[in-house]
Image (tube, rainbow over all chains, first blue to last red; front, side, top):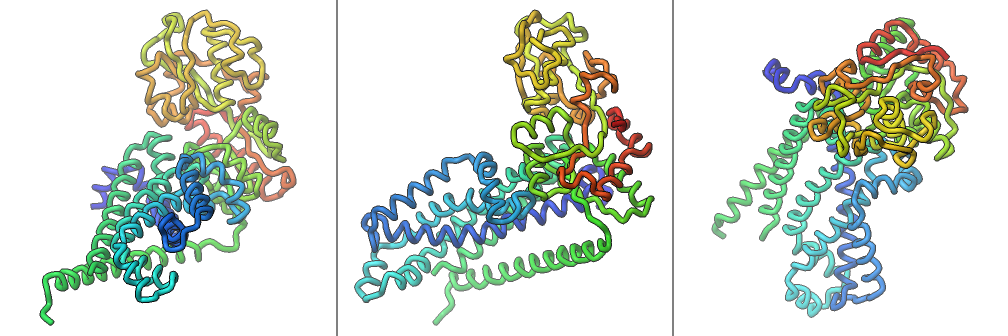
Length: 226
Length: 289
């Protein structure tokens, strides 16, 4: 088995600890940035849903400002955003390089997309439920947690899976700031050093990782549906 | 209440999920303990973070570490590999790196000029040949008007490539000794070639699409070619003034220029074992001041 791997992926097997580190770096980046971004995106999406015209607490200024910010950040290509954020990253995180320094740009890069995704999940909640809750005298906070977020759980899981997969794509780009990860490994060895097996090994691992995420997502949707 | 098919599939989904989660936890635990083991191994050594770009000098730095170990210097080199020199210099300036070894004087001086970095060269390393390669032609006379020639798209190597084209007689620069000429400094173009800036890593892969290309030697070697396969190679002379800007260097922050640990690393670099590895990469050691 090992000699077989040596034959197929000679350059990767020669750098197995580094390949392994890169994989862990990818997991850390996706995990940490994903969780932070999920919390932020839920918050922003709730604010957008509540303050939108015909929302529960319409507020044109808050809605428009947040909506435009989300649009602005969504229109900046991530490679440019990551480079532009370097000074801010350093001020906030203390370092702009390495896996640590990569997490902040990833959060800024993925949150607007995540917000839009969760916003659409929340918008899919049946208006009848909201009206019924209002009729029962529930306050806004209660409606948010007991109706909006709860009813939307299966769709939130679905959009989170989509977002996580995009986030894995972004982690390949933060290699420019020394962020590490599998994408960086593939660029440094596969692209810059023509070791094609490094690229193929990266693709295989990422396909498996995304498959696992999709699988867990499907199971969670099945469990949460009622 | 009777169990429905839906409930049963829910139970099955839950069970599968638990199995996956358990498997993930086990894998993470194994990885975690492997890391803990690794970290427990390294202690009592001075760790020096070295910023590198790409991995083509891996063998050279392995030899430096071996030399340090042989001297019982108790110094552990930790490599931080970047894809791009601009970020590497930012990280050095911000003390996220201790020293770097990836750039030549031309790039360093341009960066210092543009960004005001307080950097000092603590040692020279090597000169890398910078040649013109072609799959299509075997003589400089074969070039026709309209032929595309790919050169690196970063400022300093673009300038160096223009000087190579100038010394090959394909173009004429206004001043061939200027530091970083740009395409605007081309005075005349007797061969009629079209100069196309390109990512240096992909130039050799794209050579079939161009009449010729110039790129760094590390990419040439990785693509399976040798510097001697070049269609044209400017003569390298370590004493020639025109090559001085392209001597690669080890750089530290100016306030650390007398750091004894860094000096030991430079001394370990300037040994014949390291020179051997540099020659293996088809580069020319340049250890004098």
